[in-house]
Each structure stands twice: as C-alpha cells, then as structure tokens.
Image (cartoon, rainbow, N blue to C red; front, side, top):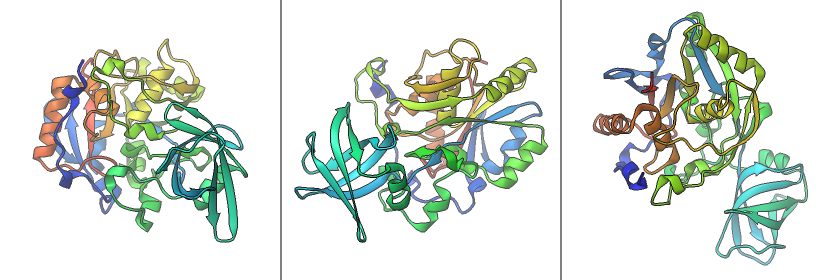
Length: 342
C-alpha cells in the first residue's frame, strides 16, 4: 500500500499549540455508527457496565538537554531511552555529526556533567554518562514538546503535558500518551460509578512516534521499538471482559500497540520491546474501541487508525474533523472509534 495514500492537508491553524482550558472540555468526534459530534466529558454515555478502559500509565521525563561539544559547537540531546544506570540511547542534534569517542559537556550553574559517544544504533547515539543520567534529565531536562508546536515549554505544560494517572515510577517516555490527557478525576470517577473497570499498561513512548513513514510502500517501513509491559492482572481483566461480552476500550494508540503485542498468541503477560506495526490488513486480537487524538499525515499512527476503522472511514473522519475545525495533534481534540471488524 502506498504511503502517499495517507497524506492529507492539515491546515496550520488546526494544530493545537496549547491545551483546552479544562481537560474534558475537548471536542469528541464519535465514529461508532454515524459520525457524531460531542464533548469529551460526555464519553461515558457510550460505555456500559462491564466495559474495560485500558490506560497507559507511563510518565513523561524532561527528555531534552542542551550542551556543547568539548571542541565547541552547541548540541541538543533528545533522550530515546535509558539503557543502563550510565548509558542512554538518544538523538544528538548539532551542526556536525559527533564522532565515536566525542565528549559532550553540560553546564548547570557550577555543575559540570559529561557524556561520551560510544556507539550508534540506527539514527540514535549511545551515550556513556559521568553520572546517573536519569537523575540528570529529571533535574535539568526540558519537557520535550513535539516539534510541530513550534514553541518552548511554558509553566502550563508542567501539568498539562501529562495524564492525571501517570505513574511517577514509570517516568521514561519522551512524549505523552496524549489521548489520556482528556481525562480528569471527575470523569474517571464517573466512569467507575457506571461500572466501567480500569486497567493499566505501560508503554514508554519514544521519539520515533513523531517520525513520518518515508518509504514509498508502508510495508517497507521499519517502525521504532518501544518498551512495553502488560501484567498478569490486566490479562485477567481482559479475559473476564471478553467472556462477559464487555467492550475493551484502549486509550491511545500506545495502549492499542501494547495490548495487541501481548495478545498475538492468546492472552499472555508481556514485558519487552515491541516493533508491532499496525496498518490496513492487520487483524485485531483484543481491542474493540479506541480513544485517540488526530494524527500527522503519513504517520504510523494514522495507519493504525486506518487499520482499526477501515481506510475509507478514516478519510471520512479526518475530512469531517477538518471541515468542523477540530483541533489536531497532542493538545488537540479526540475521537472515539469502533473496530470495523466488530
């Protein structure tokens, strides 16, 4: 299938650069039967007792650092993941590509830290740090707002570029699982009171999530790997929900990929890396409904949506969203979608 089929014109003014005043006040485009326009805080009207809502509880780490080469020249680091207590996988932006053995220097007040380039892995650099890198990023890093926002982080982002249920012990994502940012405490309590059960996965979102598919045919694209954890407690909830004819509702494409990874060969716990690339033709194993935001043209996330609702339906949804001035991308509005195979 040609990648160009997943291109569309996204008007610049529809890219949300700031969040809505309140999380659950975002608009909601519902594609269960006919397309319906609603507000996110009313999403409970589409759920019933016995449904299972699956949330990705990963937490965003301040993943961007600024420094310089020991030989001069400014650099920007964007963390991809922690490899050990002293090593990271990261993007390094600089005027000239740093060579293996290069030393990178970071100054924060009177404190000086260094990292050495010790290797490469695809488009990323393996860095060996002089101290625990996790503490360094947490204490001195900058929130890694997506490049399409075209602005620096502001105080509002400290609260809003994160879900309310993020687990601080799982602070390893370089991008927020944005579909979950529409939920507030009141809405989650309302859903629980309706009899909706809550389950959690963990998928550490990598910087590759922002990369467009560049191959001419989507089948030739090699998707980025991300770390996933689906525990036995959630597996039991999934099995119970299916057995009792409840709906499994994944919040975000990250939750979808985590669940589908774990359930490739029956319902089994999973912990490890996933490079599952979901595009039209994929047969879903577990997810019935999905909540997601509106995605970039030619992105793997858009292809996942097309696999979930069908290509023609996806194009209809996006055309309707643009016509009705929905807000797109991380701080934008949301969709509630039903698997077209149901």
